[in-house]
Amino acid sequence: MKQKIGFIIPFLLVSFATTSFSQWVQTSGPGAQVYSIASLGNNVFAGTQGGVFITSDAGNNWRRISNDFGSSVNCLWSSSTTLFAGTEYSGIFTSSDTGLHWISETNGVSPHAEITCIAGNDQRTYAGAFDTGGIFVSMNGSATWSSCSSELANVAITSVAVNGPTLFAGSRSRGIFLSTNSGVNWKAANSGLRFDSVRYKDTTIITYAVILSLAMIGNDVFAGTDSGVFFSNNNGNSWAKKDSGLTTNIIFSLVANEGSLFAGTDKGVFNSTNNGGTWRSVGLKSENVYSLSAIDTILLAGTDKAVWKISIPEISTLEVYDNNNEVKNSFSISPNPFFTKTTISFSNDRAQYATISIMDLLGKVHTHLFSGKLDAGDHSYQWDASHAPPGMYHCIIRTNDGVKQLPLLVVR
Image (cartoon, rainbow, N blue to C red):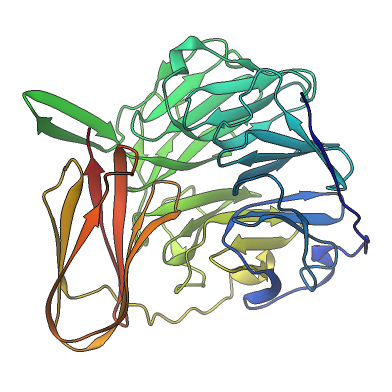
């Protein structure tokens, strides 16, 4: 059964490309964590913790056009006529009138599915599921959906990239999968990706780097992971790490624009103009950049509270000053891996403000452990993960000195 939700929106047809910005400019909203950005016509949409927002005037004004999905909006994608929204626990929604009305698509997809990514072409639309796992495909716009392949049925999908009949699907712990026939068949494509091997109860558990984002420039494929950027120029047969100039390993988002590649990270935005060979910081260093979108000549970045914008032609001359150093204080987690509880130990050499939080692999804060002023000395905080799904997480410590993160593995 399809549920219809209606909204009224005044449309002001002003393009983001009408103005050039020589520095990053914070738009007026949307005021919530921005997981995804998409455009359709002259409108730009932001998928957030609080629903979908729209701007028609280059970000001067944002309007919420839906908060009735029942959960956060993980991803947005637009075909030539339809806007797709993938939600945290409410499946897939579509709108064919730029957000005026939304339809819950339940024919073939659970209305409670956690959809992490949507992409496609003129013939097919693909959606990746995190909780139930697998890739779903629609070949008639969005009216019906079906599982692509039983080979991915239990794989937690985090990202997808489409180039004609070639598809790449990134996962939480199983690495990258490749299909060369529009999703009919899949095979693992992990050679060269970083992996961890953990011995637990006489069993070796192998987990690959979490694939947080995928992008393509021609036939070249880039994977943004929790271990940096990886690159393949042979259809995923092998991968090489491309991190020269990157000051972090957490790559939330990737977007390509006319041969140039941008990466959104937990330390701002980086740019590469030579297929990831070298990277340069281009600003927003104090921001988590969860989403990026290149619209005409404007680059948009979604952060914890706002969408920022900058003119892409101006980026080559942008001067960025580094005032965000690596945290110099000691930091450890024990036990790790663990069943239900672990202790985060942290030592700082001077009194300063700090936040300590647990983040899941999609970049969402799962638990806030501390926020306030810490005296100099040793500190410890316990995380009770008894209600957290098993899998990989990251503990993030932010202080005046910068940012530090360590992985945690919850096992059951």
